[in-house]
Amino acid sequence: MRRFAPLLALLAAVPSAVADDEPVATVDLAWRAGPSPSLDRPGGAVAVASSGALYVLGGVGEAATAVEKFVPSADGGTWSDEPAMPTGRESAVVAEVGGDLYVIGGTRPSHGGQDDHATAQIANVERYRTKERRWETLPSLHVARDVASVAVFEGRIFVVGGFLDKESIDSTEVFDPEHADQGWTLLPSKMPVPVRSAAYATVGGKLFVIGGCSGYGREPCRQRRVQVYDLASDAWAVLDESNWMPTGRHFSGQGAVAIGSRIVVFGGATDFSKTIYARVEILDTATGTWSVGTPMPTGRKSTACALLGDVLYVVGGHSTTPAPGRPPRGGRVVELVDLSKLRGS
Image (cartoon, rainbow, N blue to C red; front, top):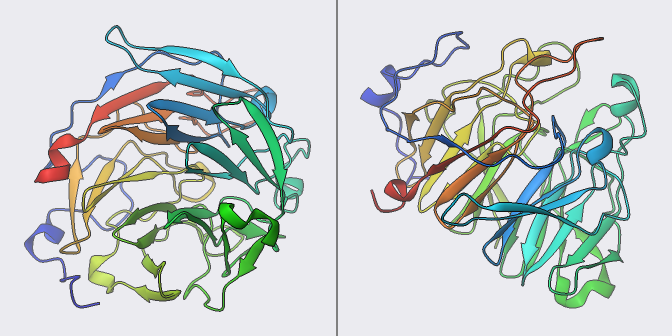
């Protein structure tokens, strides 16, 4: 992929190894606090924008079936409850097509403990008709998976990678809502490196899968690799190592958004959440170069996020490592930032 030039002088200003200190920002971002939702969502939730509103769905604990809707306003905005999902789930993916929301895969939250969580993936798919405020069950995935990546291209939904039975997945499935009765199709291509818990975003018909975890164990969750999937041709490429994300990490939550030709990557953690980041790194997909943005006020992983217009909302997640007797913090934190300067710069 020739258009991705190697990082040059900019790379020297951005650390490539995990560090406790935040790197110096080269892009000024004015983060601010937003109104908190009713429910605590310390992980496993997903968010998506539709018709000027933000929807946050699922997650751990009592949030497993809950759906909340946020509508911004001049005085901040308001949260309200939507009909609950039929299936409780965490670590799903969500896509919006034609105003409808598609919640795909994930893990059944009734399974407790890390070992159960690693083998409790589900394949079912549900659609929320936002105008009618009702849920429908759709054909299931061929491969159950959670912490996958998702893209919408020409009205079709692509689900990529993820996690099943303690293994990262290399397959891609596609679904056409206009022909829902035909179900999901497994595509021929395979990811060059199977990953889960990656950050992901779509620019110009290409899905960028960034970082994540490549295995199951103590040291696989500090990936820096950037894999690029051409949604039209079902073909994969891997950027040159000099173009990989500066800070290796996984996200569990969505972890990235695209605006213009840029992808904003935020938060995340090292293996087993030893270090949880506030840092923001920005990939210019036109040049392959990375820059550093002003960090989030609250370092978090497992966040839900979406763009409303040019404003990024980062919802929930956790800022501490969960442990017995110490619930994770950060599940009601909402922080937002106007990214419009990145669209035209």
